[in-house]
Structure formats: structure tokens, C-alpha cells
Image (cartoon, rainbow, N blue to C red; front, top):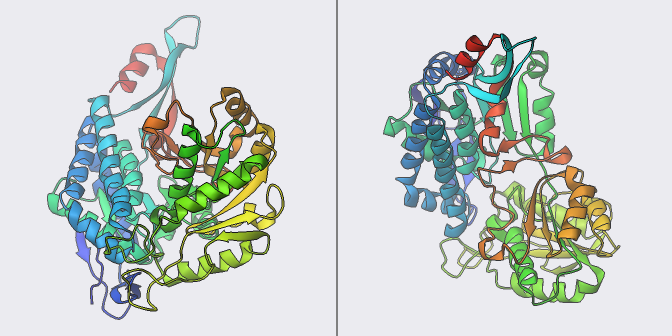
Length: 519
């Protein structure tokens, strides 16, 4: 049986057989691996990353760090086909959905590598312009950002084992911090293979990138005020991390991306059959079913004007009926299984709770058989669409994220004010997508509800020809959201480096201040 390895202290480590958690093929339920970090010395792993990796990175310019990231990107791309196959068998994603993860990883690393090259020989981040602090420019002030002298610990979710590790690592390494990445155990085989390719390429200095396969053990006990923890996952786990005694006592920086009841909002000006209408139907169906709904940016709530209800229901169901659920290796299939048995049980439980306040208008609410999969096997749930019984939706619709191909239609009066109010009931989202050709409607929504989402996808006929869909987290735009979404921030171009650097105020002779900032 395969036992995924960890890479710490510059060496590979494999736990003893029989000490781990079984990993299963989501399509066949066959055991494919057993993962454990038993026997790893977390303190030594942290120290090695800090002393070796951190020191090496801080000696490099942004351009040189960028070259490391481009090298990482090329290493992952070099085994792209292998990673796609591995994703299909170990994660249950279709080949197309696997590309979303694998290509997202190599693309994001390359993007940040290019940013580093554009920054040139500098090693300090400028933060605004300098200003005169005294009667003349003799006394000068300016802000800058310097790398933290610690390690970035990344705890990633199961749904994006390649992109999830890469998008965090790209920002940390460019900022000058070494990384310890810990993938979710259920899909860690993809992450392990990515790290193997990077290590084999020899592109990174010793200690810059470490991997923990399995539990974090007592890792958090070894962190201090110079370290960073970035977590993606459930709100419950996020709370446990935030509340860890040592992280609190040492004021360790913690960044969270958690549950998110993302919304798609159809404005009253959009007519059936229009370009924006068709974009809405096409993209909402995709954002409900891509990666079997296991995306932090998936659409969970769909707000539609009362008068558009019948046309929306007809159009959306017609689009959802084109989804074929089954084995990712079957050419007729375009939606795979959920990742684990636990995910299947959680989704079915969530569907049951939604049924208390909404009517199921598409789907069965039960496990289904998968095309091309062994009979009775696989963690399959077909696309499921609910309609709230009450206008605007009640309680659980705005409180429970069902992490699967499940979404709920909520009717509203068509006004931007009401739509913004309903969206706020989700208590903070990663992304809200607005479908409208009226700038007045869109601007009013943003003014009234802009503080409840980290990102707004403004869909209209003017951008439809290049619309990528709201679920795509582009490296140049912020990924994160307030409240329930975790209150964190990732990506956003160079903004992502803020988490891994310390802002300092410099006061002194202008030549001295400016000389340091430009070094």
C-alpha cells in the first residue's frame, strides 16, 4: 500500500505502515493509500525551515525569488498529465475539473514569479511615498515592508490539493518566507507528487519548501511571533486554530479562509434570452457543479426577481440536466463524485436540512449511481436545486453551506436594496456575482452591500465575451472575505505579500531612509 511521504529538514520521511488514515478512490471506494505523520519531529521541521530556508530567501532579490517560483511552475507543468490522472483517481475530479486545479497551481506560481522579475533587484517592499517630517526634507519619513524572520505554515483544504498549496506558497516565497505546507489528508497524493517534482528539479534552496503528509501533531506549539499560519477549510477547524493557546500567547499571525455562502444575483433589468441572461444561466450551473460543487467559490444562493422565477427555473434545470454524474474516467461524464464518504454524508445531511425550508425542484436528495462506476460504489450526488418557500429564503439557507453540487433559489422584489440586504444574511462571502446591464442598479448594490463580500463579479453583456465565471480566483485579485468567510485575504497581486512581511515606519535622514527602501 502506498504511504505518502513528508519532506522536512531537507529529507524525505515515511511513517510506518499501519499507523495512518486510509485514503480511498472516491469512484470505487478502493483503498489506495494510508497517510500519517507519526514520528515526525515538528520542532526540528520548523527550525530547519526558519534557519536554512528563511536565511536563503532573505539573501535573494525579488527577481531571484521570482525565478524560484517560475522553476516551481515548470516542475509541476512537466508532470501535468500524470497529475491529471492522479487527480481523477484520488480526488474524483473529471479531467476538465482536474485542469482547473493543476493548471491553476502552475499558472499562479508563474504569475507571482513574473511579478518578482518585474520588481528587479530589490529585496524590500516599498509602502507608499516618503514625506517630509520636519521643517525641511532633512528629517524624512517613509514606510516599507520587510520579510518576517519565521516560517509560513499552510494548512490546505481537500478540494484544491495543487492550487491550494501553490497560491499560498507563491506569495510567501516571493515575500521571503519559507513554507511548510500541510495538505488535507484525503487528497494529499496530488500535493505530494507536486512537491516531489519540485524537489527533484533542484530549483529551491534547502528548507524553502517542506511538506507534512498527515496530522500537524504539535506543530503549532513550536511557532512564535515571527511565524504565520494560513488556513483554508471549515469554520469549526478555523476556530480551533485561532484558539490554540500558543498561537494566542505568541500573537502568531493567522489568516483564515472558511465557509462561504456565495450568492449569484440576477437583476430585474435582465430579460430572458438576452446575452446577460444566458451568461447567468450558464455560469450559475457551472458554479454549482464544477468540481462537484466542492469549491469555496461555488454558488450556494441564487437571488432572482419574482417576475423571472418561471423562466429561471426552466432555464437552470435544462442546463443542469446536461450534467452526467459518474466516473471521471468515463468520457460521457462531466461531474465526478464527492471526495470522501464523510463529504457524502455531510452533503446528504445538508440537503435534508435545506428540505425543511425549501422545495427540491431538481435532484433526488439521495446518493445516486455513477455512470461507469461499480454498482453501489462511489460518493455520488447529482446536481440538486432547491427553491426557498419564503420570499428571500429563511434561516438555514443563509446559515448552512452544503459543500456539494447544491444551491437554493431565493425570490426577491428585484430592487438592488433588497438584494444587498438578502446577501448580507450570509454574514460574509468570498464572492458575490451580480448579473445586470444597469450600472445604476449595480452601483447601488455595491454601495449598500459592498462590505459583505471580498470580491464582486460584475457580469454584463459588455464583458460576456471574456467572462471566466465567478469561481475563478485570479492571482491578481483578492481572494478572501469578511465574517463567515474567515476575514482573511490571499492573492490580490503584491497585496498577498502583506501577510508574510512586517510594515515598518522609517524616520531619519532622507538619504538613509530612501537608500534602505530601495535596497
